[in-house]
Length: 94
Image (cartoon, rainbow, N blue to C red):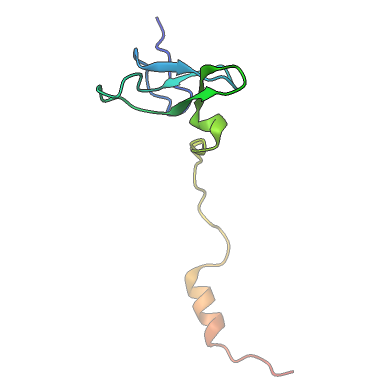
């Protein structure tokens, strides 16, 4: 059995969840104010449809998606000692 993950924070979901109106993904949302829970989105009353709607922070633009992990490559260009030597050399006047 695979765990369902929050579309925003990528952590396992519990019973405090909602479904985003825009993207359709589930996310953490505190359904009650008296119970501490994570909020990865918002809920509001839509005036047009007169209903409570839910939006995740990604679709609402509140948080950026976590960057994908990248491996850092060692810079193979000019070394620090070469830069220091170049700074000490007198420059030619034009």
